[in-house]
Amino acid sequence: MDQISLAVNGRTDIGQVREENEDSIRWHACADKPFAYIVVADGMGGYTGGATASKLAAETIQTHLDNLLKHTFIACSPEQQQLILRATLIDAINSANTALLNTKNRNPQLANMGTTLVVAVMWHNLLIVAHIGDSRAYLWNNYGLQRLTRDHSVVQEMLDSGQISPGQAKQSGVRNHITRALGVSASVEAEINSWRLTENALLLLCSDGLTEYLDDHAIERVLATHRPALECVYRFIDDANKLGGRDNISAGILEYASRPLPRMHIEEQSITQRPRSPDVTVRKLQR
Image (cartoon, rainbow, N blue to C red; front, side, top):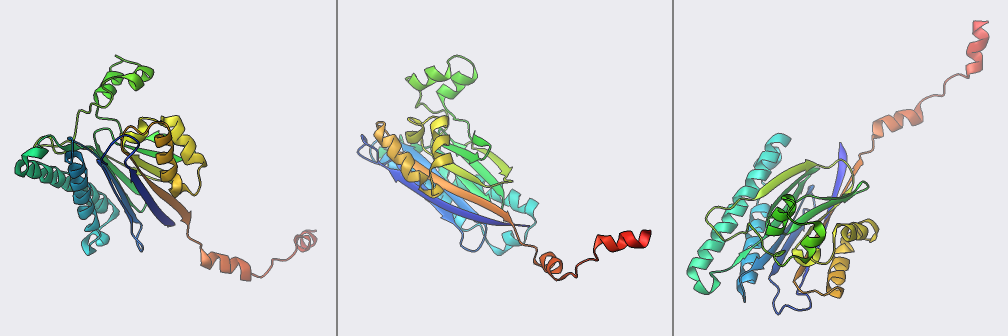
């Protein structure tokens, strides 16, 4: 069995142009159990609408995750725990969607609000990521950077169909048009995937205020070189602001570290074992 260490950090910034921060971020690492999560939501809907949507979504997801580690969950098998984690995320996302729709019905001035969402949950070495929209999750380890999410956007669909090149996508006038969002319709379709981590890694969750300016190569360079790793969030926000900061910027980092537990009993035996007879004695007996 390995000893697992999880640490998280997150920050959100208004940027250089916007008058309001419509991003929301939540993060948590349990002090006595290998459990951690990050939630990033990027709101839309004009004045107060986007901020209300992202905050409500992030708080709803946070409440569900904070209530997860009950006795029944801890007592379950790893297979059952994985099913419970996925079910909890699905329930949390549906609850957040319902909360947004109810709020819109009570407040006509918020009729156009909605939000993207990306959430990552770690339990031991199990990583589960759910997302809606174009907020992203990345995993970096010694093998490089891997994007864990695929944008739900018009530009991504055009890229997938070969209508435009990656270079053209960066300049597209519809690059901020998303095809899925929370709080838009009664049914919401989140994409959920899971992995088992086998080595130390960094997980980044971010809004498009960061990826607007930093491509995958720039993100990988920061994650690979900037230390302490949890302070990458400040570096990412600084870099995006220096390059223009036209949008709000949010970044959350989860640091996963695993190392084998020491096998004390075996080590004690090897230390106290009596030395074997020299090999030369055996040779003399054989003559």
